[in-house]
Image 1 (cartoon, rainbow, N blue to C red):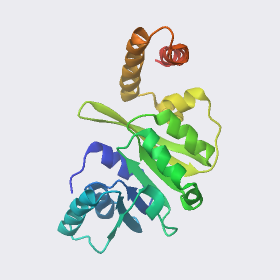
Image 2 (image 1 turned 45 degrees about the vertical axis):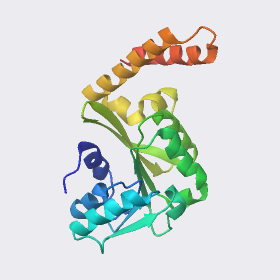
Image 3 (image 1 turned 120 degrees about the horizontal axis):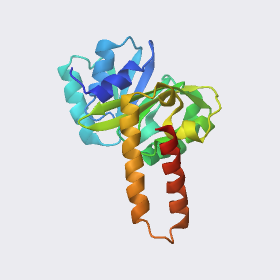
Length: 220
């Protein structure tokens, strides 16, 4: 099963013997790849819509893995069960992902590992999960069709982070590779454009954007 670089990078962060739920599984390409290439104990493909699950079912059957990948229809963690320990969510907005966890905070007690690839608001989801008893074990940047995606792996535990850590990512800050510079250079330019367009009476938004521009220039 061929999958894109983003999904491969997510799969690489999945631990051996993990019991995985892929929320928003879409066509279940990641789930099929995990069974075929990773040594995991269990895999559940979940989605809120019947359409993606039908497509997932077709792909799973075609791969001959109907007995190894379970499918569940439901809203996020509503269909999570205690026999799992790892949650993957990719391709959703950061606010949507945060909402999924807020809806089922009690489920976090049995989730050891969370692997996310939010489309936006990455810093917000980092702050949220770190306040809920997780730390950032690893981070990756992956380029796919000229778009650079963040992938974040959280583990149960606690570490202290500052504003710069949450904004850039503590692991990414240490790596500071070519993709890091490319990604955050674009972030800088977008904020400079925003600052030029914001009305002067948008005091808080202008203050926040100026602060982020300063931070980006310091690091880059």
